[in-house]
Length: 380
Image 1 (cartoon, helix red, strand yellow):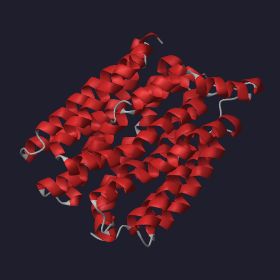
Image 2 (tube, rainbow, N blue to C red; image 1 turned 60 degrees about the vertical axis):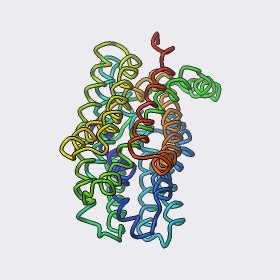
Image 3 (cartoon, rainbow, N blue to C red; image 1 turned 45 degrees about the vertical axis):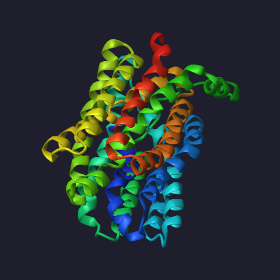
């Protein structure tokens, strides 16, 4: 069950995290400015923001398998359309629709995995499941450069589409509920209202959600930064991002297990904020420095910026309880998507108006703010 949930999520995450690998190609194909690149990178998050919560509610009501397979199947269809998008606007719309459809897998696979593991092993299990995000990015970073030409991303989008079909088939074949996790009265509308009004869930979602900004700064713009500022080829720059995904896999599993051992999701989540800030600050200081120092620091900072998600994911599900875990996960992921929409546009603007060094330094401050927001939750 854990393997199926992880693989299904990986198929969608290849798009969500791997799209930056196509940025140099898309820039040539559609003649994009830096600001338009930010819009392209935010498009998938826009779609996910709209549908993340409805998909979570649907998973609670109709089950994980149906929601997962339906969403990934639709996502694949929109990605085929994106492969042949005639212009920038069409590309953005199709990516937003793909994000809206594929967002189903976040709540569905997470909910399925959560219900099969007890609280003292859930952090590790969800940590393994959340490795799907960096694994998707790693696969994209390794597969996409040989598939695409400098000015044609068609094959890249077709790869994304085929991968989502595979994820849908695996989820539909393997994913099963554990049994009667919730009684009908636990799914009454009043319980949904209580879940979504819970101030702890709002604080958790906002405090952890702003961590996404640092992730996008490094992972979303790392290829462009290394290509434009240091002359690396798109393929070599993508390999640096691939190294970040390898680090992220280890960090997600490690932080998940750490939270099991200490019996807290919030404590480790707050501590990770400090480490992310340090990684971004080091990247900023070395942004104009020698590549032999910058590359490993950037790769490590990228991995750190993605190492926290399993903690927030598990905390959201546990706050809501089993019956409404899908809705809680959907809400928390919707907040992340909201940040994901704004972050690439704001970061691109900060680079344009200042410099890469200043932009990375500003990004280092954001997780520290998130850590402060999470402070009152330490007792939960």
